[in-house]
Structure formats: structure tokens, C-alpha cells
Amino acid sequence: MKLQLWSVGKAHEPYAHAGIEDFTRRLNKYFPVQWRLIAPPKNAASLNEPELKKEEAELVLLQLQKDDYLVLLDERGRQLSSPELAAFLQQRANESTRQLVFLIGGAFGVDERIRQRANFCWSFSKLVFPHMLIRLMLAEQLYRACTILRNEKYHHS
Image (cartoon, rainbow, N blue to C red; front, top):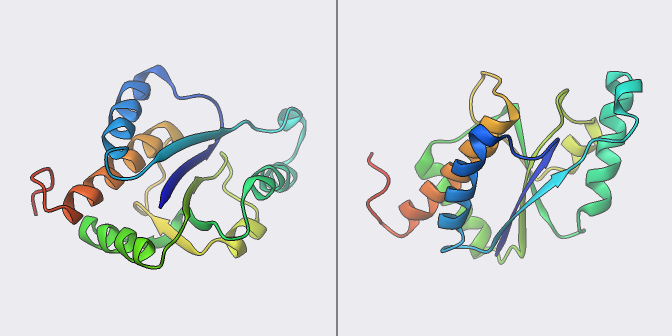
């Protein structure tokens, strides 16, 4: 199973870059992982919120494969504990999921078409976080889940 970590927005900010890279490198020991940063539309500044979300949805949907398992990160999604996330990853692997895509939407969220396409909506919290922190937290939580699956010492319950 391959993990794809997608984020609509700009490149990693320096304050988060080192942590994202570190946890991505660690995560690669368990699953092949790749970041895909999806640049906002060139005319983003001239679009209203619904138009921007529609344009971003087009960019995302063009890159998704039919059989990709899409996990949308959204504050209205289901919250998981770290052991539950580990079980979720194991279930996807057991189902022979080829590509598991985690999507962090744009600044205003995602278009309804993305929400409908998502196989699962996951919330880290009812709080809203900056994209850069979510990227870092996503990489760390996936790494943590992998260490739980392997019964390694990183996670302390």
C-alpha cells in the first residue's frame, strides 16, 4: 500500500519543513509515502470562496485514480484515537488498498464533490489548525500508527 499525502496550498513553511521531512522519512520505513502539494489556481485571488473550492476540487479530482481510497481531513469528520488510526491503516492494508490518499483541502475547505468522493472523513479535532501544522501532525500520526502496528516503543498509551 502506498500513502499519498496531498495538501492544497503552498510549499512547506520553514518552521514545519524539518518536522514534516523527519516524520515522512520515518514513515517510509513502513509504507512508501509521497507528498503532493497542489498549487491553488493561478486566478485564486480573483475567485470567490465557492468558485475557489470548485477550482481546487477540479485539480484534486483530475489527479485521483478511480480506485484510490480518499481520506479527507476535515474538522467535521470522525475523530480517531491513535490505536484506532492504526487499526484503520491495517484494515486498508488487509483490503489490499493500493493507494491511500490523505487530503488536506484549501484554506476554505473543500467543494462538496470532494466530500462525496471521500471514502472517509477524518477530524484531528474540532479545532481548526494552520495547514502547516496539520501536515506535520498528519505525518507524525501516521508514523505513530505504524509503530503501534509493529508494537514499537514510540507510542505510550
